[in-house]
Image 1: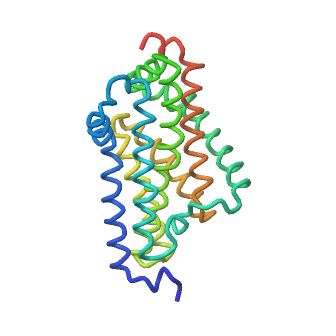
Image 2 (image 1 turned 135 degrees about the horizontal axis):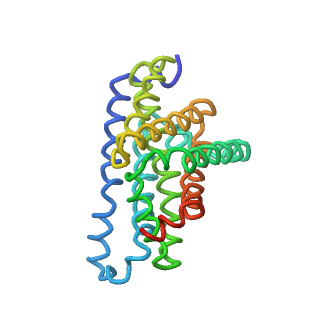
Image 3 (image 1 turned 30 degrees about the horizontal axis):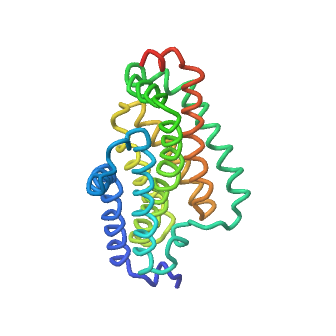
Length: 244
């Protein structure tokens, strides 16, 4: 009997709920950061680097939070695939997948979004407020988008839900579908096209996680996708960004 099977299904269900509890703190990092900076009198002047501040706080919650949750079944963050084992090949794989996904997004999905992409162009335009804003936003894309979202949506959801359903191939497939659906719902502001592509991208990252049994490739794919898409928008949609 594997370690996953030995750890009862109801315990895995509780692990899934505990991870969801950690995630609720993560998604409220804007509020937490505001209260924290205000209490120390550091709120003034934090505007340009706000994305970096919230990302650092989110990481400070996510990493120890999930490490603590996964001490129960054992393995800590390594159980979620957060390891440097075979990192070189995983980085190459992730970069390749991220680049392909970014090209698809820039040249196919964004044109299909129509007016729904206007908010994206406006947010990209806002990055040019200062070099600090650009740097902070890059940290947001790579750390929050790449690391933290992969830790929750791929690592936690697929691991906990898959094992709660029995740890079989079919239960892992259900967990993969659920993780992709939840990720798509979190992008509902992008409309049907944006949500559909978010689900497609999430399925690809989930396949990387399940195939390699590590998060490295999916983290790199997600982070590079976000960063390359940002660069692509600036380069190929400069007129819309400037008007935003």
